[in-house]
Length: 112
Image (cartoon, rainbow, N blue to C red; front, side, top):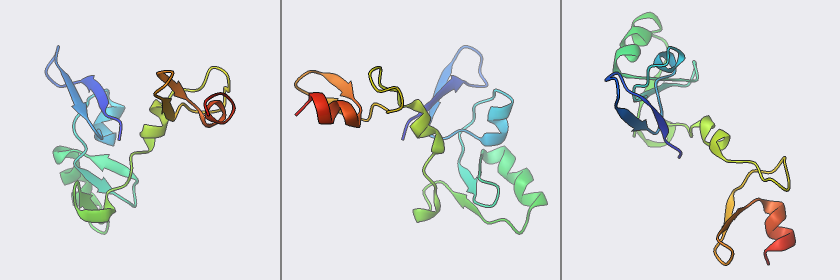
């Protein structure tokens, strides 16, 4: 899973999280998303999950690391670059011989 790099609450420092709080991120604040609500499709930090749970008691919130209920971050796919030769294909493979990132079409046609 790709990590999110953003400015933390302490000015001048950088923090890396696998998932950021969806609510805080809307305000350009990057806190670790440690909880997930499937009904809302949002990640929450320690602070925001308290507010969420107070008003939406019927929603089931899953903590990070609680089995199979933690979803794959949808932003991971957005971080993959597009191929220069095949503009609709994402670079998802690496050719060790040529030390180059490849899309599926490049692999099929140029790297056997």
